[in-house]
Image (cartoon, rainbow, N blue to C red; front, side):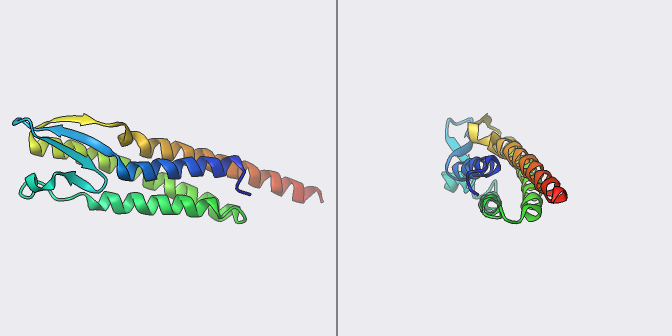
Length: 153
């Protein structure tokens, strides 16, 4: 039942995470007017940062895992209990990755002694967490409806 509203919520959350993999999270303007872009896969250009910062590839891996779990939870519609657990787990992971991204972007700005400009994809984990929580509520409502119909029989 892919046409359910919770499947659409999960699909949009998945799309936000995939978009986050390819777009910049923050842009740093160094005092010497060089521009460094932070994305989920790391810094570009990275030849400047070899001695100051390590790559952020852990974020890329976590976002990929979250996107995979969101896609997997779409197809667990026959097992609502497991689907609800996946939604809660994804929501917690999205909040953790959001906190990590904010902390790391701030830390990199401090370490580089630069002006930090956050881009729109920095809030995508929050949007995905809200969509995943809405999906959880819809799945829970469906589960209650199915249980009440089973009681009547």
